[in-house]
Length: 374
Length: 63
Image (cartoon, rainbow over all chains, first blue to last red; front, top):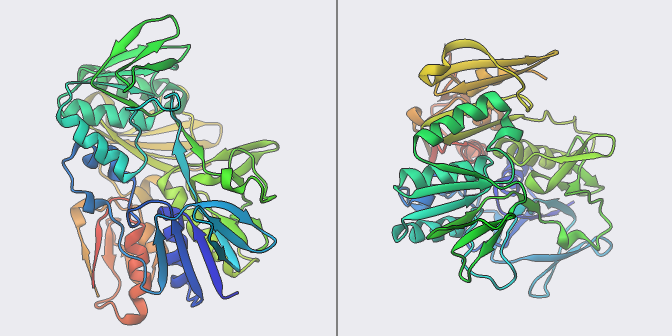
C-alpha cells in the first residue's frame, strides 16, 4: 500500500493523517476536505469564536507535516469500491489504495427548503456568521437544549442577549440525568435564560427566519434563531458503495469497515448491543478513533482500541468534566468540595459502574478518568 | 522546531503524552511537560501530532 486517501479534514481525519506519519509510514497521504478553511478545532466554536471574543485563527490546528497533501473545498460525492476511487463534486476521481472515512456529521436543520436565516453551529463559518449577527441582535432563540444548545445559550446570554431556549424535552435531562441537569439549569435560570418546553416540537417561522411556533401554536420571536437539534452523519456519498450503514458507517472494535477501509469520528457507528448501533460524537473519541484507524490501516492484526468515554462542557460559569458512561441516575457521592458552592468532585455509582464528574474543580483529567470505570 | 507550553491552559487530559510519548509526559501533578530538551527532526512529526490533539490548545508549535 502506497497511497492513503482520507475523506474529511476535521480532527478525526487530521489525527489519522498525523498518526500514520507518527507511526513511521512514508506513503502518499491526501486529505480531502469540503471546507474552505484549513483544518481547525471545533471546540471553541460554541464559545469564544461565537461571541467574537476569540480570533478565528485561534481555532486553527497545528499544521500537518508538509508531506501530507491537504485539499480544501473538495466534496466527496460517491465511493467506487471496485475501482478504488473517491468521486468528487467536480467529477474528478481520486484513486486510493487505503481509505479512511472521516466525513463527520452535519447539523439537523429545521428550516424548509429555501427558508433563509436559520443559524447552526458546526463550522468555523457558521460561528463567524453568528458572531456578526450578534452585533445587531438583542434577543435570541436557541432550539435544542442539549450540550451544544446550552453552550450557545450561555455564550449569547453572557454577551448580553435576551435568550430563550426551546426543546421538546426538559433541558439536558436525557443526557445528564436529573441531578446534574437541575444544577446547570438552575445556574442558567439565575443568569436570566428562559426555558420553554415544546413537547410537540417547533417550526421556524418567517423568511428570513424570525422566530418559532410550537405545536399548540404559541409563537416566539427573536433577532437571532440558532438551531442545535442534533446532527446527522455524512454517509449519503457512501449509499451506493455497498459499505455497511446503520445510522453511520459501521466500524468494528479496531475502526475497520472493510479490507483497506477504516473510519473514525462522528461518522462512525459501533454495534454496542446486538442490533443497537451508536455513534460517539465527542472530541476525544474522534482522536482515539483517528489513531486507531491509522493503526488498523497499517496492521490488520492491531489490538482493539480503548473507547474514551470522556467529555466536557463549559456553560453558565460551570466547567464540567465527565468521565464514564452516561446516564447519571440519582444523586452522586461528594468526593471533594461542595456542590452548593458550585465546586465539587463527584462520583455516581450504579452496580459496578462508576462515573466521575468534576465541577469547577481543577484536577488533571487523566486522574478524573482513573476515578471512573465501566 | 519548538513547542510552547501554555501551562495554565493544560488540563492534564494526557492525549499529547499518549499520542507522542517520546515528546510529552505528565508530571507528578498530572500536567504536561516535555520529555526532551530539544525537538530533533526525527521527533517533529510526533511533536506536532501531540500538539494537534490537545483539546484546549495548550501546545503551540513554532517552526
